[in-house]
Image 1 (cartoon, helix red, strand yellow):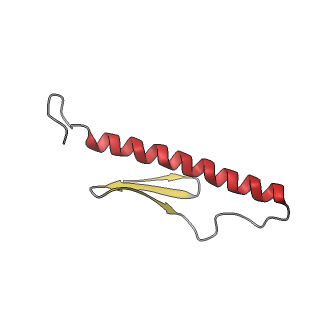
Image 2: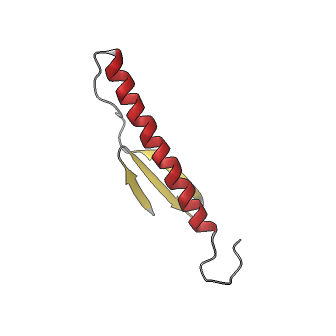
Image 3: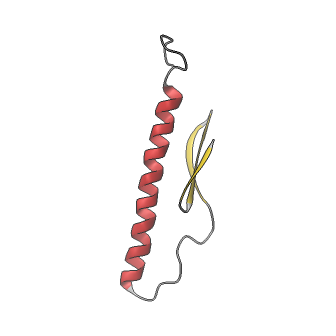
Length: 72
């Protein structure tokens, strides 16, 4: 299963969850310190969202599929 969170893919399957960049270029050209801080801040926010999604998917994968069945 794959989901897109802005500039990143979050994938999960039988081997766990991972984040992959959608492209080689993650920011545009920056001409000032403020532009750099804003671009990097947005990437950090996206990575935080990826981490939340990865943790949610791992929790879903660990849960039992049927009520009453033990989870592994």
